[in-house]
Image 1 (cartoon, rainbow, N blue to C red):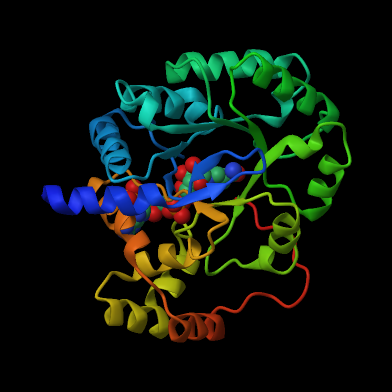
Image 2: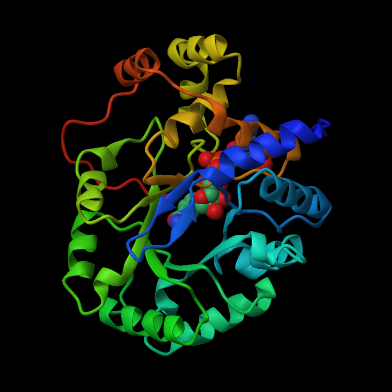
Length: 299
Ligand SMILES: NC(=O)c1ccc[n+]([C@@H]2O[C@H](COP(=O)([O-])OP(=O)(O)OC[C@H]3O[C@@H](n4cnc5c(N)ncnc54)[C@H](OP(=O)(O)O)[C@@H]3O)[C@@H](O)[C@H]2O)c1
């Protein structure tokens, strides 16, 4: 893995630590974090994955996002191991399965997550997506967890605008602190309505798959002439431009996932990149936001 000198380490740590997103409850959440989907599933990769997560925290990407779903708890186990001794530096986020998000079952689900993560509280607990359990029950369970100090606050994930409207119409629905949704340069549907609506309600977006995960779309993004020329101009990698674009708005957090410390280092540097108006115009021209309503992209 690349050797990072102390000065670079401190400067990246400062840059990322200064980037915070204000939440409706008045608290602050790190803007640049780390995802963990698929981490913890391959024993041969375990040490490298732990190294990557710990390096990310050292470089100021202190939010770690996981879920009971990921590897059926294996990801939470890995995160628990990775944050041993540094729990107080980490902003810990996990998610409950929709079918476990009923008034009482959510209490058990959270207790199991806490046990796997080897901690006594989560900073943020999210409903992974909307299922059949009435939202009023999930809200009541979340509020109880908050009152008991098991979670600092709660939010949702994969909620489109109509789901958010339903949520906020309910008792304590306005306690929702964030909505984690798919958002990257190649998937800008939320800019049409959800992003604006959430801004009006001061509820930030947490962008998942900010690097467009694998596959063709990502190749299209990375290999596009526009992204390539902007990367060249800033002297950085194309993938760093994709991430820098995602965190350009101070109310949008992003959780890139990497199991490779070299990639984690590259991701941590993205917050130093200052895309200018010319860059953004080029990117808008090639990857425009839709001008009509599209269904929320979901992975
Ligand atoms: N709420 C939800 O429903 C939901 C859904 C999907 C994801 N998420 C969360 O969001 C996180 C991020 O999304 P994601 O995992 O879908 O994908 P992503 O972060 O968009 O992309 C991850 C992929 O990019 C690679 N990568 C990372 N940094 C790189 C770099 N600098 N250079 C080259 N390749 C790089 C990783 O490989 P390496 O490991 O080799 O670096 C991995 O294959 C998840 O891990 C999860 O925590 C939430």
